[in-house]
Image (cartoon, rainbow, N blue to C red; front, side):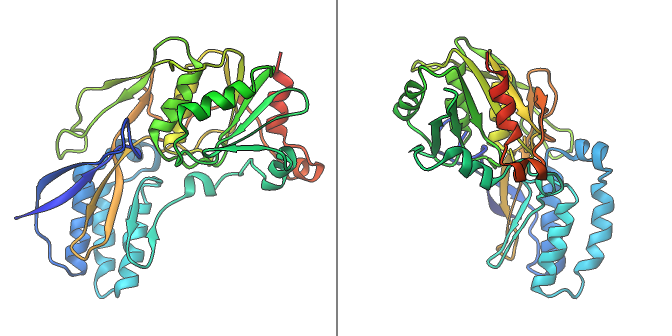
Length: 338
């Protein structure tokens, strides 16, 4: 037996920038093809949190996967081994499941690649023009019908409360506000919480979270409540239209979950990409890293958001729309402004 350092992390900082580390007893595996395979399969078998969900949706049988892929590692060279491992974990179709080596990152992005993008850089540039403002990862301007428009391509940058105050104050005379998070692959959950807190005047129940409590596939703690508290800074009181597509994932997916519970908010666009599991990281004997979902999260009705969240109003962007120079998703929000 040996001690293996395992990093248990929230979705890129839950409430503060920190990592929780603990020493866990794990079997010692040889640094060869079979040893690395068994180490990867075992750590996921004991800690991955969506096996039941993936079995129901995709027919995933983790034991059958072991039998099928164990044969493929025999005689494989380094790059072939990486490919086999990537295909194995790709069976879960989970964007939070990744394999890291010095030469590549194994991933499955079918949650967004198999669907229309519903976003166009060309149209975005047309709507934004050249006189837009930028503040700590926020791109914003007032459209010509006096509607505020904010673009958040990522939650990796943490805007200060002063930044958000300045941006919202800039929109003070606007009729409504459009928040565009299409293709936002996530980042820090604290950013999602900080931004969502500007759109409620009371504390809201937004969902639940569980933690793995044992090695069995169904060993979980009791569900813990997730609440959203109103900001003590400037809060927006008018209509809000949140634009989504399949590229919305992880912390951005959580943001949609929070905003669905806020008053005056309408979500427009496509089903989000999902990614509702807080990631867990470990290391194989050969030094490759593996990350996967370990703590499931749910909406306020107890429904898993791993596979994404429906908009309030479905709206798509077609090739014809792009040729016409019209972003129909933005225009839908503008048309609903009272």
